[in-house]
Length: 199
View 1 (tube, rainbow, N blue to C red):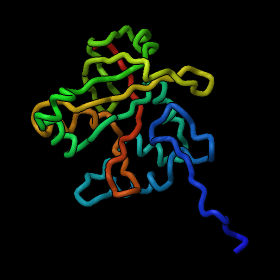
View 2 (cartoon, rainbow, N blue to C red):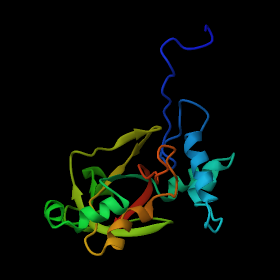
View 3 (cartoon, helix red, strand yellow):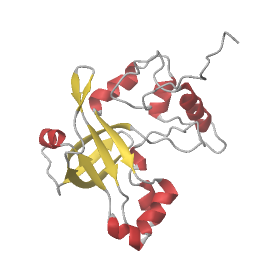
View 4 (cartoon, rainbow, N blue to C red):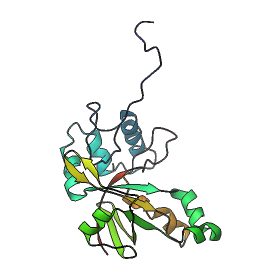
């Protein structure tokens, strides 16, 4: 058994499918299991054969087109909260909607200055897949980060839009790449790239 690790496998880190950072721990752009799941999802029964652009770029041997997207969409976005049907049910619940009566974009004071935004103003969050308008919350909870010798920014996309179930389910998900998580075959939307401007 000398060819095996004594304490089990070592966890591997991968950046999300779309990220402002290259994966520095190995040569892979994203998790090979995630990419295999994404490729499988794109060929599912009833699918028209179209592959999401982000997934197609990540499956390609050359990541230059994906890295070019970083210039067009330089801000990392993270969805906070439920998505899909569970999020829709939450948004339609009167009790839960009273605590979080809609969606909002949470950002750092630094990014708000760069984009000319303030708390309560409306911003458009967008990429090539879609666009969502929501009010802004400027907070000290979120701060810029160092990203390969540059200042990087991220935003938290919080809450759900109120209204009918289809609208609530779709609000932030329209911005995320159609990548399937290798665990449970659910859509993987933990991080992706966007840009932001005043609405």
